[in-house]
Structure formats: C-alpha cells, structure tokens
Length: 478
Image (cartoon, rainbow, N blue to C red; front, side):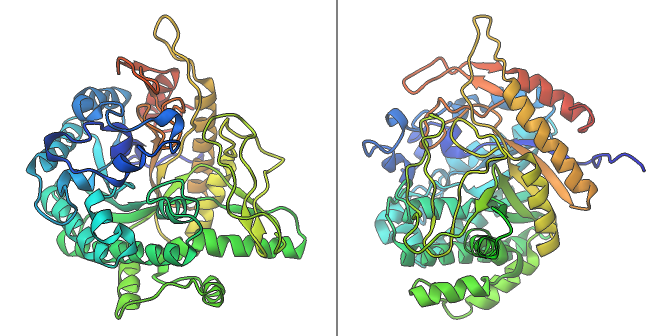
C-alpha cells in the first residue's frame, strides 16, 4: 500500500489573536474593547495582566512576519480588532486601523505567506456593550455584518481564507454562564442561548454577504471542538455522551453545517424555558449560509469523557485552573444529563487540559461523516512553562512531542479520507493567555516578558527549528 503524503498545497500555519498579541490598545484611533475594560476588574486575570502592550506585535509585526517566513510558514491566521476599524462599533471607519492590517497582509504576501483572517476573536467595541449590551441585542447582527463587509471590500482581493467567529461556544459560555469573560454574567442561561442565536445570525448574514463579494474566497467559523467518549458501555453513560454532544458540540456545528439546531437539545431547552427566540426569516438565512460555508474551522485541544450525572450531581460551575497548578481544576457537568470526569488513560497539561492526539483524528472523522465539509485546523497547541537559558536557547521537547503526535494523527485522518486544508498551531509567538497571564506560553518564538515587564525581544525555541523541518518536508520529517 502506498504511503500517505500530504497534499503539495497544504497550508502549514500558526495563529494569533489581536488582543493577545498587538498591544497599542488606544493608539492610532483605536476604540476601547470589552477586554480593555474587563481586565481592569480586580481578580479577573492572573496577577492583573492586561493586553495594553501584549507582545507589541502592532509595532513589531515586520520582525514577527520575517521570523514566520524564515520558519517557512505557509499561512498566518490572525484576527482583526473591530474597535481598530470602527472605534465605536457602528460609526466612522478608522483609516489608520485599516492601514495597519493592510500593511500586515502585504507583509505576509511579500513572503508568500497566505493571510487567514479571523473577523472576530472576542474583542468587542466597548461602545456597543454600553449602547445595547453587545451580543445580547439583535442590533449587533447588522453592525457585525457592516464591519465584516468593510473588511471584505478592503482586503477581499488579497485574503482568500476568512473565519467569521472564533470559538463562539467559549466566549458565550465564559461570558454568560461562568462569568470568567466579559460581560461577566453568571448562570444566565436564557440570555446565553439568545446571545448565541444573535452570533449565529451575524455569522450567517456575513457568510451570505461574503459570497456576493468574494465568490472564490473561502469562509467558515472556528469552533472549539471537544470530541467525546462515553466512560464505559453502560447505556446511561452512552446516553450522557449523546446529551453532551448535542448541547456542547452539535448545538454550534449543526448550525454552521446544516443551518439548524439539534432537535433533542432544542426540545430540552424549550422545556427549561431557555430556547432562543427566532426573528422572521432567521431559519431560511441560517440554512442558506450553511449551504455556502466552505469549511468547518476547528480549534482542537482536548477530548471529554462523559458519564451520567444525577440531578443532584456536579454543576457547570467549578474552579478553573488558571494558575498552572496541576490538579486544581474541578469536574463540571449538567445535572440530570452528563458530567465530564478526567480520562484515566491520558496525561494532562499543567492547566489540566487532557492531551489526546488521537482525538484530533476522531474529531476530523466525525466532522467528515456528519457534515462532509473540508476542515481547517485553526488552532492546536500546548500551553506550558518555558525557560530561557543563559545562552538564549529555549528547550521545549514537550511541545515538539505534543505537536508531532497531533500531526501524526492528522495525517491518519487525511489518509482516512478527511479533507483538511490547513493546520495552524497555537501560537506563533508567545502571547497573553487571556486569564492566565504571560506565564502560559504557546509559541515557537519566545517573547521576553512576564506579567510585569520585559524587553519584548524574540528568541527561537527548539520547536521553531523543528516546525521549520516539518514544513520543509511537507510533514514527512516529524
């Protein structure tokens, strides 16, 4: 049997997000975002860290892109900050913001790096939060579409790959259910499902507009996908897996792929009084957009184990490990449906994230079978404590082992018949890890900064040289 070889045009990439890397949070006309405000609430982030300066990518993007080019990167996935383009969310367009991203895109193209743009990666103009509570209002739908079309009209001839929303399931869950992200609401299930519906409509209308303007471009959403396993073959645990998938995976992926909600989950939410309200025409718009998406974007980090959870069992709310102290995270679940205990067969990171390379293959297979869509792996990576030696070297064999194992499983998935267009690691440079400060490092490129300060100088980790060889050999040398 012939050995599988990666397609010649495969996009080996890496990713970032505006708030986590750019800094320059008020410069050149940028408006305030929800994150600029939220991080100033005492106790919300590790050691009170902010993205005010982040890793200074706004001023060092040329240096960063040159390092990407030296590594051989085929695509760079980055997000655009809405508040840099339209400072108040729905008013005047800020030309300086557009120019920054145009310069970044041109820099990528200069080196033959395919720019992949995320339209929204969690940083909402604070003005829209103040005006109508942001995602809680259907007004955001048309404001989002207008913002997206500004980007399409300016960059559509230069950018082929577009992602509408990054991890809608995460920013809504942490924003309206566990209060860990802005706007910091707790256990507000009714609003949570309505917020998600507004986000789905913004995604759908954006996809439809995109296809009018850039018919040959590629667009989809990126979903934080956690494929699941039942803990054993006890039927009640098998059913718990179905409940988990419907409420935690298919609720989003079925909208992106089919334009409809999973029936059993919708019925469950109707009984609870939490089902979202539709405006006239929503159903048709969702279906039309689903028929037009080009790929399913997947941010893959871990799998979940599912076990029946009694009605008086664990809740969705528990301590989240944001410190890197292994074992400090707690089990969560949905009373009466499922809980997610640790997997005894797998190791975890210092932040209690399960390490399961084969789950990437499993997830790709599931998407291929269920939706028959091409796949973009828009994130996959390892957050860890890295140490810079006196000679400036950074030895991160654990990151190399993690990525190698995942790429091996990705190749198996592709050999199985899954059509995967791109693989983007998280991340290219070290960056601000939202709640976790700067100590949780993901990059191939070490940035000299901690929670307080640093020179911002860049240093290549061992994994940088390793990924360079992976790309050079098109995945043959791992």
